Length: 400
Picture 1 (cartoon, helix red, strand yellow):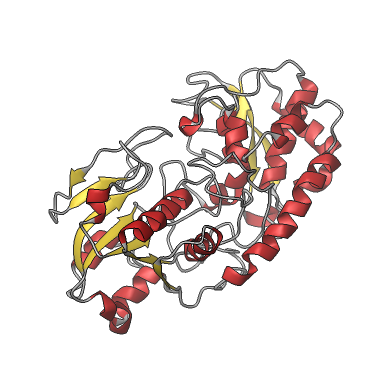
Picture 2 (cartoon, one colour):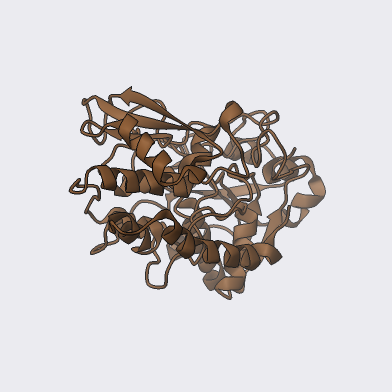
């Protein structure tokens, strides 16, 4: 299997249109070749490509900033000398003067297949800026480690944010190249756009089911994305960023687990199994203990649950991470009706809205959790039509 980056480097005819043009690169730590050379170094070493600038998304080009809302500065690449502009610093959209530093921008970002992952929104913002400034955008495509399955309600009008670029479900089932095609159509953008497609990529093939498990090493695309299991669970566990429960930041398995010092995890698992056992197929839930070294509940022993989305427990077609995490919230609310479950702060600078609602693109999931009379079938009734609609919407934009 070859990524878009590997194909661009190995096939001179693909990069021929770049000759004589100034080229920028938008990348992060997982923007690597098959032999793990970073895209910056590999592209600079290619005599046909003139790299004049680079851009870093959230967490920075180097991936050194741990948490959300930690901003990266601009700097000059210490090896190659060109400027590296931060798209998660003073601004989220490229400045006009930055757009003057290149003719073509190559976007090489490993995504996690989840609407809230901010690289998705950064892609949209760069496409919009490219339209304004008449620039060319090439996406060097990479695998979607969460695969094709779709899950979650569509983002509602008025809930757009940096973690919600448009009306798609939480688990969208597209690659970055495919997302770009949908953005251009949905937002009616006039952009010179090209996808350097992957070669030999089967998004449905076992054992990776989206990730070429036996062919590519996993490199963290962000600091808290350390494993394929995390990528598979992320469309659910990311909701913990809007809850007072720990999502495992400050442990070695962030966003694969949840817990707190004041819950009985064994009771939570039992209640989840009582409420909707069919929502728990495709993974295994394990009672465990952890003590975060930073972030929520730092230094306190937490009773928690780890979601195992790997090995013999994993069934790709059956696993529904958004429902699993929603069910965990529902179980905690049933066991502890007055539990202070929801955080209240301007998540990703969305003022006046609860983070859990910003994450979900509307209040419907939180309202379902907090409604003592609501049952799992009620959430299914909200999500299932949206999921079917998205399957139809995305179909014309699929490449693989």
